[in-house]
Length: 111
Image (cartoon, rainbow, N blue to C red):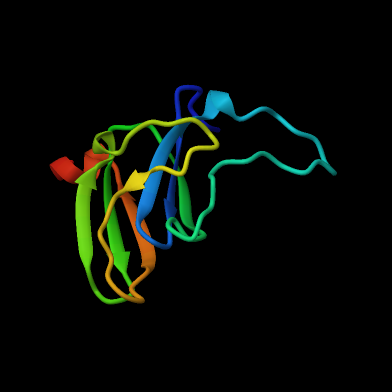
């Protein structure tokens, strides 16, 4: 079950990301066209990963070239569903986001 105060974290292949409250996503039935979650551009690239979060976690982003970034989820701006987000990690050349990991608060404290 998803926490009603949860958010959706979306990270794109070119290092952009955003947080959006799940309340902004309407329920849809089968056979619908879906719901827009991100404005895709050449600058942002396609969606690389999406995770449900509560906002207290940390985020680790790893690029295909080996760049690693660890930051708090709170440092990523909350935006509406159709926004393109903000740059989370600076990537050069053909480097792309390979994967992300959301690290919960309990893992941060060692408990």
